[in-house]
Image (cartoon, rainbow, N blue to C red; front, side):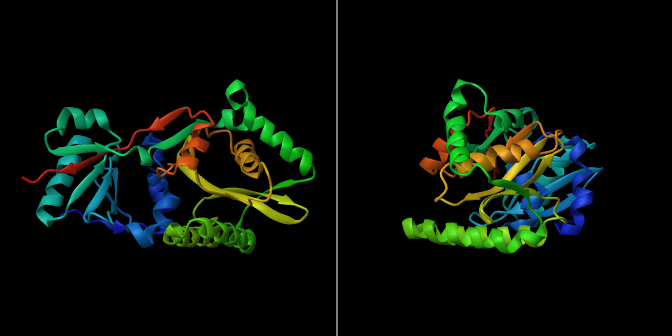
Length: 300
């Protein structure tokens, strides 16, 4: 049997040591996300033949969902070991197929496959979000010009644990307005608030990067994210007061402007099938969509 351990904040250095092998850009694989959502997904890891294996609990279907192995080992043999482990333990097994070529060659008969467009990640070039150049992004530049004309003395500040109270206050105000319009999302908003609190209480330890917009001493927008791999930054959370026109566009651009230059890509995560959110994410002209294929292990 394979010995899996719960992922803890103290494991960050170990987990990120495998990022030199990691090309996967999926938001679920970011270390900060794995820690912050542990109350729901119970993220675990094991190391086999100098290769990192990460899995999360599947709260709706039971069993575990695995990400493809990352490291120097023989990934085909490691995947065979994971299949054997799941069958021996009687656990349902799913895999997010980030390693499609390997699955097509070696495991197509072992699994059934499906996709859900609602969970595809939107990935952008950092430079594109920082400059908003080109005809397709003219409307974004217009939003920023309007914001600048209304609030010419706004500030962009970096986040840390010291900003926790202001961030949580803005999130609660944002949530109250959203729940008033759509009470069906109350549970999801409450879970997200728990994640934001966890992020702000453990900002440095999780390796987070974030920023906020301040107008006349008041925080009106914030964004929080971390790296998925050494070239990809993931925006986990982005909130803005609805009373300040253009604030979402400005916080998005300003984060891209202030990120370290090693980040070529920015993952802005999925749209969850929400029509307005899908329109907004598409309007930024994504560089690529991460097609998340899920594989479910067949019974023997």
